[in-house]
Amino acid sequence: MKTKAMITMLVSAAMILTTPIVTLGAPGGTPGRPGGGGGGEVEPPDYGDLIKLYRDADGVPIPSDPVQVPDPETGLLVDGGLCWQPIAFNVDDPLACPAECVVETTDPATVYVDQFSCAVATECAGCTQEVDFGRINEARSSVGVFESQLEDVVVNLATADCITLDPAGRLVTSTVADDLTVSTSTIDSPLQNLAIYRQLMLTGDLLGFPLPEGAGKLDTAARGLGTGSGKSGEVNVDLVAYINAIMGLSDPATITILDPKICKFYREEVQGVIQLVE
Image (tube, rainbow, N blue to C red; front, side, top):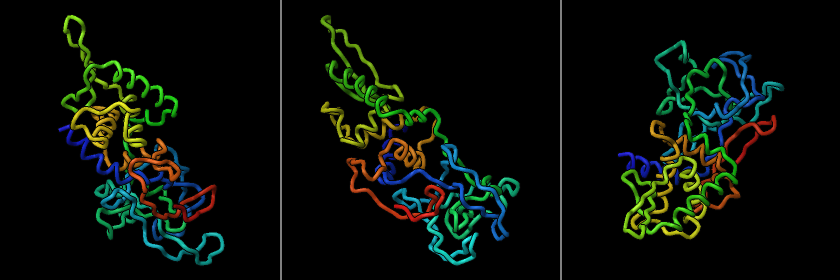
């Protein structure tokens, strides 16, 4: 069942390589309680603000509709909307998630987002749910670390007499000694498996070493991501999207085996200014 879940997850991973890191909660706007007169504080984003979003079947965030909204400083109507929409949680707990923070016109329900700043007001923060990265935080390692880990994997593959898969779909190397004793080793290091995921998504091969018979590129990449996430971690569409962004796989300049990328436009803060970005 674990292998099936990992393989299924790659379907989402394959479709959301273009998803950038969320900036909900970015500074610059001061939205108040929905329907109120402003004054709510907005916190700057960090990796703890990577939250679950309203997405389409391909895993791409569905933005709010474009609208005309008043500029908080001038009062003039300006372009607004096209904001990322967090999925609403704790909707049965009015203390954690006030009813006025929930937008029922989407399925599932989403959290009210100020359509000028694209930020979630502080009083609505309890409606959002952060993505649990667990040990897959190692995805924030440097390129040099991944390349070093990949080299270790390649050494194991190069010295193996046989390469197979274990029941969970992880790579297994086997060597046969002179006395015909067989030694096996499973590549189960989370960091090495993340390196496998990154390499396969970038190039489709492990530096020229063939994958075991019947092991597809995307399936093997998915298993690497699943192994890197840990035994108790949940691999969901949001986690894959953020991991891809953190690892640089969704950067427009990065070539992957899934190019061309899906490109969308959203409004978000860039250096203190709300802009329409790709």
